[in-house]
Amino acid sequence: MSETPKVPGVKTLGIRLPDGLHAQFVMVAKLDGISLQDACVRGVELYVEKKQAEPDFQARAATALEEIEREAADRKDAIQALFGPTAQAGGASPGTAKKAATRPSPAKG
Image 1 (cartoon, rainbow, N blue to C red):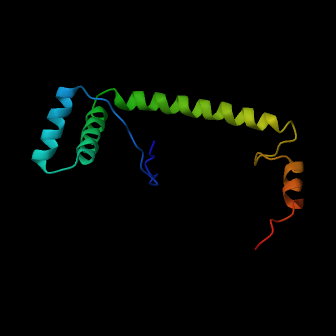
Image 2: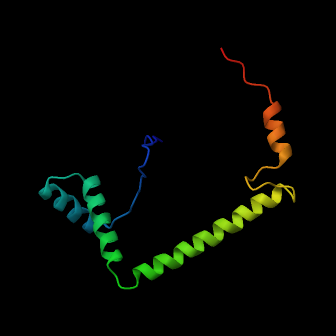
């Protein structure tokens, strides 16, 4: 199985289309003189723009953001709890910093 090379800042998306829709999509892209990839990007851009224009979109996005922030705070608290009550604001205990400072440097060569 071949792997697509990773490009920073770009995600790969595989989609399944019914045969008839795929045939139309190929023809529309061909008539516009663009690749299927470019047609997909344009389609996604239009979809996002349409959703952003919906009256309740901002409220739904704000609710989703609040949930993400709650989950992130819960995860941060869980990680900090792993260090015990002596954990510093930076997230590492004093012993962790000391251990890191006393580790030998990797050999250069």
